Length: 409
Image 1 (tube, rainbow, N blue to C red):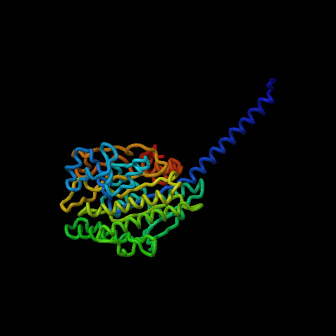
Image 2: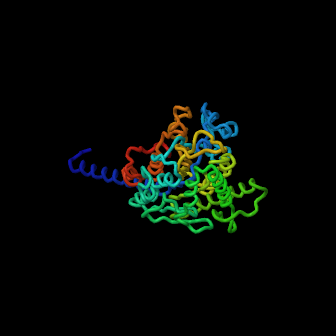
Image 3: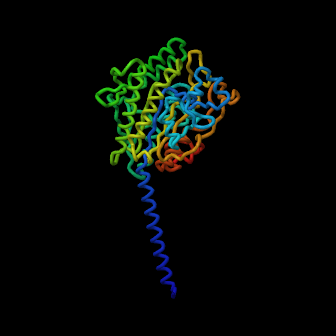
């Protein structure tokens, strides 16, 4: 073949056009894939005890610290060190299928042990309390909206701070009007937490109320505010009723997200995890509710589950040692959950500091080894495509030191 300068330039131009077309198609394919992906954030308010959510039954110091709260043989094993609470049967099945992982020893950068302050940091994404007046998930919506239209949905009677901000967000509440300022129970928890009489009494009362709030009302719609209908004998019937409501809530949330042009992002708040007294009795039904909610999301999303990532987190953990009333007090690090059909199978996310006395934070709490913002950053980057620059500067202000977790999806 006679190769002249003209034919060479023409060939190069054609090759360049081909590369440009391939690049455009690849970009369009990536954008299409990202547009199908969904992220659900579940907030467990009250300070969920991570050492009960995922007990480290293989840690030699676990049983001695936990005494009557130690689960050991009752727990659902994950590996040689960790297990899941026996109320988390659906989550355990997902973990065995490679679709659920635990994130032990995770905490926000602030060390507040006040519910109100710690929840503010968890949801604002700032490094310290009152560091931002909008939520990190709302700012993530704003960052993504520069690239493509993204819808977000708040589920529940309280519009959480994590979704408040300049980006438009829809709200839906099962049987109750959305109240953006409904934080009285949280304030009362902080007020009574050091009172030896009122503290445990308020905790028990709140647990009873939140169990009642899970009951079914208005036909098949789950209610977070109405008293329960009759549901069999005693607490067992109420727990079953709460599980039914939670599963229905998960399926309803999934239904919104499966709609054409439906929300890619959703946030759900669950109350009642402040277990200063009688923790075993209080926590089991609350975790059963959480388990049913996550199971409802899984089954409700159907084939879309493969494109969904679910994060479950709380504002802080609880003390490593059991207290004198069969409960635990406000602590530091807790355990988060990551679930989804597209989750990369693997072991724990992060590092385990152990429960040795020398390793405890301030000689009382599980020590944090992972910044919560790193977990959230990794989820936003890998699941939704939020760019690192936006994560470090806008979504989580001044957080370049908190590197995103990798290998989630």
